[in-house]
Length: 638
Image 1 (cartoon, rainbow, N blue to C red):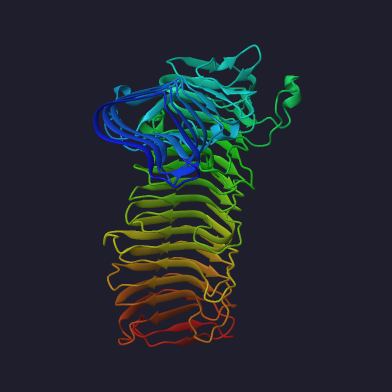
Image 2 (image 1 turned 180 degrees about the vertical axis):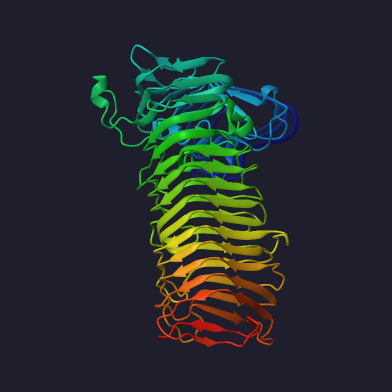
């Protein structure tokens, strides 16, 4: 080739046995889809050279769909593109060894496109080969993570050297721990348990577990400082971080500790790449009461400035289709790095976070996406995270958040439902329970909850947020579901925008109970807004609440009120035994019927409420036996 745009150099389909020996494919800048595409019963490729090519899109230089393949003693140089090797179809075994890749820029080295569950142990071994790569490329998973590990687990046994051909980057397999030098890095690719005893260790490269029986145990008092792009990766095996109260395990950059090693080769770093569990890592085995029984666990651990803003690792602790117990884990983020504190992607078992602390994450404190089981957040402290505290995208799973504090998160000025102390999307079902929590100091939402069949918010404190609570159900919610707000305190929340609602409830078919809450010192167009968009809400009760010292500005429409009841269909409301004392508000209570034809479609039973006004009350309503059959407004004397 000579700078040409081509399809494939070699394309062989439906062959029995294919042998390719001693050829030189010189691209001279050609752009192709693939250099070699082979669909055969067997393939042997030995002593070839592929040089000076680039591939388009997400194609690979070599695509193999062969039952048995031997690719060895080949040279790949000056290549640019998506990936070097793609395994597809019926490949059952591959011997990809003694090859050399130099002076190339690839997204990653090996691509899988189907499950290889029929391969013994589900493992594909690659190597030994010679790969020319940088530390940064390896940290981004160029050689072992961007293939789909759910389809196949690839074990690499190769030599990696830098582009200047002067520095050994990684040479697995090798001893992980040098106890004399207190250094730790490398790959564990056999069944072995490595225990780090208390002390200060230096990780000058990735720490990688890549065997089902590999186990790394960090005892209480261990402190590992990491070079740039160094990380802990659990592709296969078990990681146990076993700190104690008062003697945590610490995982930090080298910043401030370089001199303690007395070694100028120790790199001074302010960030490192964090912890990553792959989908084939051993997760946590939980017993009754979410007690730890076995498997991986992180307990009494401090993680400081972990995680880089790249697709390979977007969190200080990242779980890819793995569930691992976090207990008394403390994470300090780096605010200018676009990473989460903790990220769970499709965890297969229960997510349990006990005593978790996340401070200053550059993205969300905790993200949980599409768990297969329940989520428990207990006694967490999540503060100062850039985009939000806790974000949940679930598919009908139950969520329990209890005894936790969310403060100063979602500090971005952008107005979005994603900018919340707690944001939860239930997917149309499941129970969301928030109890005994403190939710404070946000430029937007305190709690933004959507599409759960039951939402219970109890005994919690909401303060200093713009919109303390937004709850919206979906049309798939069952008729037996409910929204319950009980024994909460809402104070000092302020939304000064036009038509801004503080506590905004939008049930579809749920019954609603608002009971025993204290709503005090808030400012909004409507402090509590209940909007029923359909005509089959089973029950709406507002009982025994205290509404006082709230500020509702005047509006020309007259819809602004401390308690605003609105309906788009026939509905019955019970507003009983509440106290109203809001001299600075246009209306204490108002109702609106949006049916446009039947002013009696909305029926409100308001009894035994106590209204304290600055002067004589003005009641604009038709009151018959304490039942309001037309739209009403109740307001203090202005």
